[in-house]
Image 1 (tube, rainbow, N blue to C red):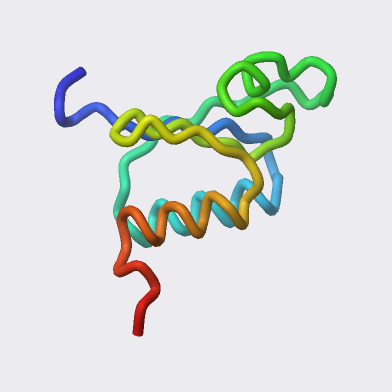
Image 2: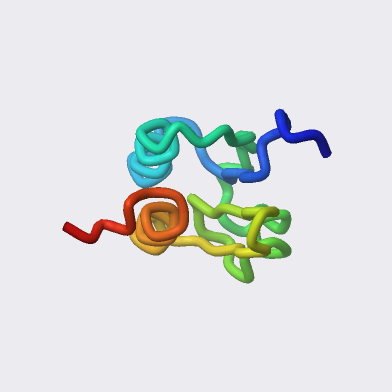
Length: 89
């Protein structure tokens, strides 16, 4: 993978407000990422379960750190601490 390839993959649904929250943070931090739109049916989201252990979205996989997680609040906190100013005033 070259440096220009995104190292973060975001698993998301169309029009999902929690997913859009993560997209906003990725954009604010100017982080390149790859979007993977997943099955709307919760029971069919096996690809998400394989990467994050849950079928819920949003979920991310960060190849830079090996982190994989779901839940928008956890993802936003992780991205801010890892790539932002850490939220420390």
